[in-house]
Length: 186
Image (cartoon, rainbow, N blue to C red; front, side, top):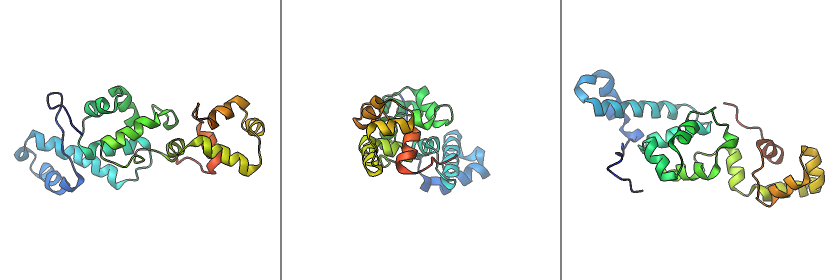
């Protein structure tokens, strides 16, 4: 990944640097300088996220960006989204995970040097891994026609057809039905 040095600086933060940077910041803040203090604060935040469970998409996004050492502006430009959108994704409940663009989550994870599924919830992975095929497979296993499934879900038959043809993204409750899972409560 190549970054324009005029517009920003890469922070080069890594969890392995924590011992060398966080302790001096806490004990001798005047001796390490402003740059080291900022780096230590970011590492401390990343470490706090690391020790907790990374269950929400917002936590995963923030953790991936901080440990990769990339500023929000640079990451937003790299992925091709607005910085405010990235900020809202990282701050959690403002945008429901169901409404987050799956392709952006994958691009963010890859830009941060992570696996493409790192920032995704199980619902997003369902969308990436051909949700239409999975809905169709579920329907066949249950012995349902598209019309019967539509009645069961309270939607139009054309809606089920569009899900199966990958023209529309199915909502979260369809993922719950097809996989028999409930979303992780945060």
